[in-house]
Length: 191
Image (cartoon, rainbow, N blue to C red):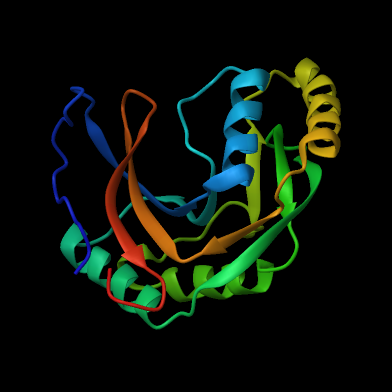
């Protein structure tokens, strides 16, 4: 069974949760440390842990319990897999600097398609592109500078480029511009 909280009430920090959810896999180890450090260096730091998004933010239709069961069911029948961060790229329209995903991108797309159904069905404004965000919400004039810094750091500090996706987390947005964990699920096994 997954660890699930069904509260839409203020969390322990007093942040009001809103009907906006996403599914992510947190990145740990050397790759996670690189991403976390770069996010702090690039600023402004948003207190977001290194992750790869599987279902981008969306409102939930129906109950959280049913939606959580949907994520758990699909993740249980999906095998764990590895992703590889390859190169620094930019989503120009959104002013996002990111690490592209090479190996594992097809599995992320397949998992995205499986989860994007039922209560989670949502038409995203952008097509799903597996990536690891390094910096976002940048002023337009800072994008070239941050992209150059990201490329430099990635060339210097590339200790690990691979990460196993064996757990995913359901997260919820708050009015305080934070994401809080709601549930965690094992890939290929009950949560």
